[in-house]
Amino acid sequence: MKSIIVTGASSGIGRATAELFLEKGWRVGLIARRAELLAEMAKAHAHAVALPADVTDAGAMAAAFDTFGRLDVLFNNAGSFGKAGPIDEIPLENWEQVLGVNLHGMFIAARLAFGAMRAQGGGRIINNGSLSAHVLRPGSVCYTTTKHAITGLTRSLSLDGRPFGIACGQIDIGNAETDMVAALKVDNPQMDTMEVRHAAASVLHMAELPPEANVQFLTVMATNMPFIGRG
Image 1 (cartoon, helix red, strand yellow):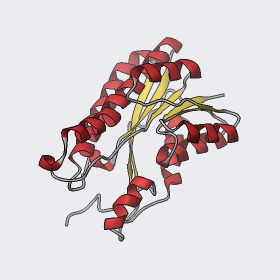
Image 2 (cartoon, one colour):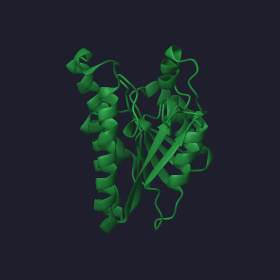
Image 3 (cartoon, one colour):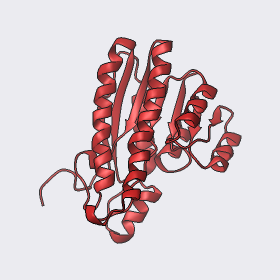
Image 4 (spheres, rainbow, N blue to C red):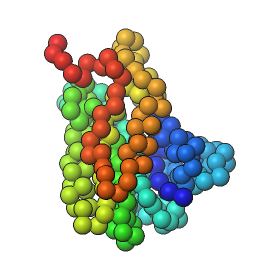
């Protein structure tokens, strides 16, 4: 049975992805802070393993990975948008919180997965980037900065993983119908969105490739988003 750990598994893209992998017969490790939601998911699925942990806590994350055991795929997904506004209106503590989750937390998870996969002879890491790694929204300095950094993390893992059979790719998702996007849509009711299941299906496609193939970068988005074109 193939195995995957999903961070940020209690809601949004992470939860939709975890549930799809469970439907497809994978063993799924569920990492998030909200233990009660993970327990609820694990109760409903025989092959779900609740691993409550804060992605910024290196010790808790190491314990979660050790508990789960063999790992074929990591979906490095947990993220936070943070406070919107120009940089001089962003409190330093907010910047540090977004940096902690979106970059430090993803580094911790990738480091643990890389080590486990190197020891076992291979695996795959899928980082959740964002369209903000390419085209950004106004007032998104914290989120945008971290998502650009994830592209660098993805490239580094891809290069350094080659000798060990570790593939790494990045999925950049635009306007999937999650709580985060719903909050943005309050101020922009005409925002074009897509069902979150399409993002989950794209992660599954990346994960199911044979070891000799890799999706390096994949963009999946609501069709009418203004990602391509000029205003």
